[in-house]
Length: 449
Image 1 (tube, rainbow, N blue to C red):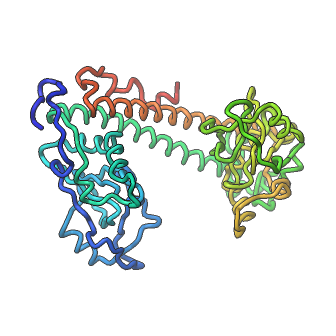
Image 2 (image 1 turned 90 degrees about the vertical axis):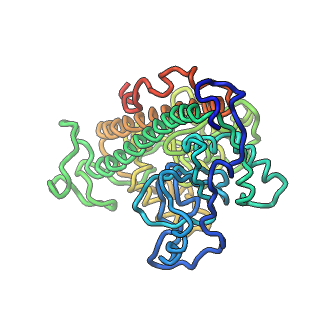
């Protein structure tokens, strides 16, 4: 694979087997899960480690230190190691990092140690490519296996140019990887900021005169009063949702006849984190729309709320959207002189609201809320002016997160296209503009714009 370092030419590319460019290690050859212990070493499966090499240990099996001693004789995970999913998430690629953390690896993945005849990061990206996914699909076609054996893994074909070109390709794709990871970090950062701010805003609120958070209950208990939902500012009320709304209705209890186009239908799987997604959207014709809206036609600023599978997702209908209710959703129309819909949407996602929902649906076979449950839903309600201030603060963070998600998607699309072109030789890495690996501005700067 050393040919073609100075000249980009498809004839210089070679195809070889994964076995020839990497040592492939089965971390737990017996494939029998070791006994679980209360205190021990994590026995990490493919689902316990993220693609960027970070660990999720909340449900990991703990095993005896003797298992670690046994594993240490066969492998050592370093920043050179690549993990490859063999069971369940077949084809998942893990970019391991150096760590002092002690763990063992289950046989749900294989460990790959790239050899000197290939660029490690080139191999990492190649294993994520459609070319490898297609090979895995063919290897498993007609099989009842839910795993990819080590012997089959060894036969995966790797296409590569000379080492210098490999390194250039890897640098471009890794730069985009880093940008995606940094953008996800910003999404996580602002999501955490919002959670902390929500805790303050729904317990202390904003002083309308100063536009700042009120002092806490501990700092100024005289400005608070005790309610069924705890201590809140004296000006605030706690009451059943129905007392602040003009309408709360359930969806029609019938299955609509869907069409390929027409009027949008709000279904539970389209609603998440306060947003309606058009992905896999459903439609009804004009008659279907009339049937679904016979009791009440949804309009802008109404809240669509999921009462089952899952419970507690919601979005506010924006201006210009014509939509009807699908199954297992409800419509909440607030009285705008008492309750602002955008404030209520944020409250639905607050810690207080989630606890109320969890307590109500807990223990039921199929978690759900009835219309009566939603009407009686306890709601913290400040004055309308303060509701607007609270909603504006939280919506501003939502907008930042929205921009970060758009930026992340943009980099993912760019990376996917480049990966296919560069890793199959359709495009020369030397032909790429410098801006490909040097973003014009960071995702945080994008949010400011």
